[in-house]
Length: 398
Image (cartoon, rainbow, N blue to C red; front, top):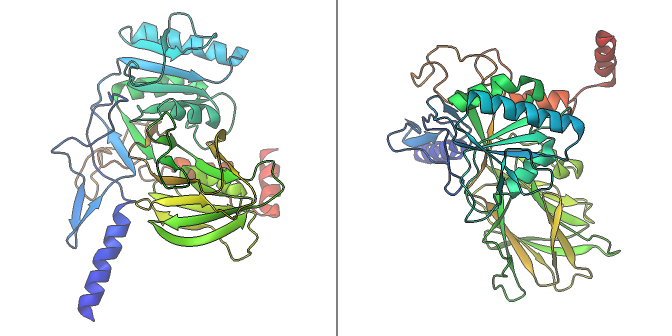
């Protein structure tokens, strides 16, 4: 009995390892052609009960090299966006004159910025700066469909969203901290997906593996008929879903389409894949959460009366006919997003449980500081707010 309990303890420790944080010291400069990695000699955790506990939530960067290239990604150039870009570029050119600024190949490219085109021959980018809403960050992720993504510094342009740590008014503090490397990076998981024909052979999609930040959704589109979709997890048949569709989302995407369909809210530090049905015919089909090591295949049943449209982060990309399938896995290349809570104030010089000093432990938030995610679900979702507490909040603001 004691031997069984010991084995169970080790297994539980291994499960917890995927959501822990790790210590890492590495440069901010990261080429998009290679994944973010921990250099040799860095501490990646500590051994507890014979199991190594990895810290995979946030990486504290304290000795970063100033980026040599910056990519500006912005929403449509309204007057506030134009003014914000001009202000940012003026500041970067005056304080960091050696930094090369790039922009997408669009008619509204800012003056002085070089054109940047995604692809295997693209110029290496060390830092991505986004201006807009959550959709702008999703678009930035789509520019790096294959391979690693540089750290992303996102600015809100008056919009609300879960992925917008900084307001544009705080650009000087954010840019200076990011360029100096005094930041905490939250690695937001992405999903990669590949397609198979009715015989199970790979389908050429002109891209190795499409990678998405929020979700992959199969839906019946304009068809009046429900989709019949066979779900396989690691090759094992899980269920036949008759519904308007299915959503496979990341923890980041759990507060997007999946949440509207009744899925759970998952903290972005977890390595997990969420499967959420869209209006299922069966009342017993509930959302499921799988470990990130799982491989999920969605195959349109031969008996399905309708094809299924497939969208990735809200962009329609494919139509799957009966017999065809899509396989979804966790991507090896997450989105490294710079946290606001880590740079609004200098890190406190304090030892942590591993003996690190001054926030080098990789903790995104020190004692007494609130987590970005906790703040967002309270402010944006009004999480668990009753009618009375909402009324009191309005009264206190008046």
